[in-house]
Structures are given as C-alpha cells and as structure tokens.
Image (cartoon, rainbow, N blue to C red; front, side, top):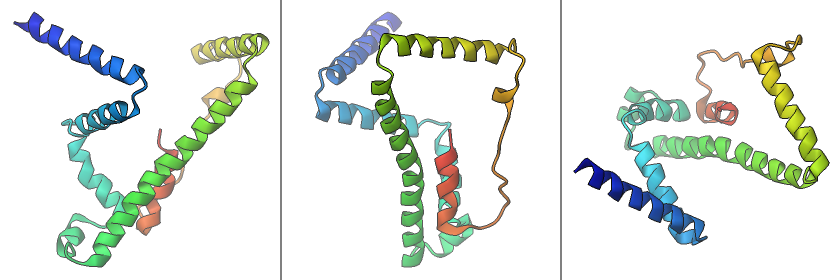
Length: 161
C-alpha cells in the first residue's frame, strides 16, 4: 500500500516538474503559489505569524484586539505588511539583477577558471587552513527594544538571510 502511495506522489511530482519545465507560465505560477500555501501552512510557520504581524505593525496583541475595527489599525497593518514585503523584494530583486549582469561579464573560459579557483580558495579558508581571518569577522546591527513603528520592519527584512 505504501509503495502505491509513494508511486502516486512520485508521479504527481514528475507531472509538476514537467509542467514547470515546459515553460507554461500560468501553470508554473499556480504550482509555485500552491507550494507557498503548503509551506506557509506548515506547523512550524503558523505559530510565527502573530509575532511577525506584531513586529511589522508595531502593535501588540492587545492593541490589535482593541483597535480591530479602527481604520488606522488596518492601515498600519497593511502598510507595515507592504513595507515588510518590499524589504524582501527590493534587495533580492537587485541581487538577482546584479548576479545576472555579472554572469554575462564572467562568461568566458578564463573567467570560469578564475571563479573556480576563488571557490576552492574560499573552501580552504572555510576549513581554517589559510592564515587570515578576514572571512571570520562578524558585524551585527545594534537593535534595542524600541517601538519604531511601521518603518521598523524595513531594515531587518532587508538584512534577513
């Protein structure tokens, strides 16, 4: 019985992969949306939602309950959510554009060899065999527990990994 279920799941996965690879954008978008819904509905994500909403809006749970009908609370929640989303969208879109532009620049075989050597050097540096500690430095934002309002979620969202 388990083998039949596993085979059925494998067939569904293969059909989804084929639909995405066939460049049917509408089907690929639907599949990506459903994957996002499934990942959002996971038990390890749902408990985080109230904290994110509180962080994005700068409102506590009590303030949200008390002002649930107030239009100012809704505007603050909507604008906070949009700015939080923009904090992810803008930097990652710019990173993608930059990476795409740089990939055209480093397209030749000699550039590929240099990049391969760089990857090997970074791997050796990661093991600690190289004498310099430049790659082991750390920088952090000094964040204190202050209500920064709606714009408070913009910087941490942009710096999230």
